[in-house]
Amino acid sequence: MFDIPSPSSRPALWFVVALAAGTAHAETWVITDAAHPLASVPANVRIIKLDEQQRIEDQLSSKLPPNPHQAALAARQLLGTPAGAALMVQLATAQQGNADAWSIGISKVPAVVVDRRYVVYGQPDVAAAIQTINRARGR
Image 1 (cartoon, one colour):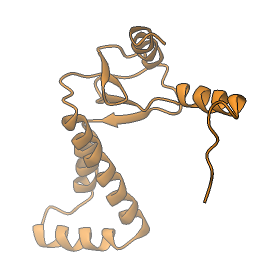
Image 2: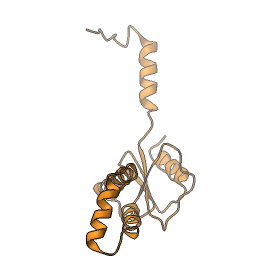
Image 3: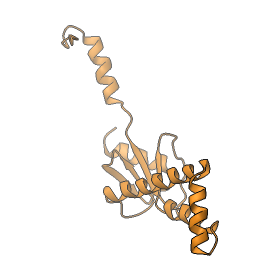
């Protein structure tokens, strides 16, 4: 069992913990579509493209034969391959992104969302939108 030191017994330790907690990185999402390109997207930002599911489905169906029976057979064969498995992961990720955007009530794109709570609409420069949110939050 661990004994947690009181703040008075280890002030330097508590300062480091408090500092680390205060600078924890916020979760940031950018919600957009193909018609709204983005600029200055930091590497740690999740990008959700609302039209990604449709793009994947269109890509898949364009490779299938027009005959429904043959198309079903070709789709089953594709899904049994590593490429098909990767396609299903991409499709599931796109569907989850759409569900996440819907669940927080996104109404326009592009939208930059921090901590699922703060949003800036219409700013394609993601870094600038994050700065706007941080200023509004007093950071």
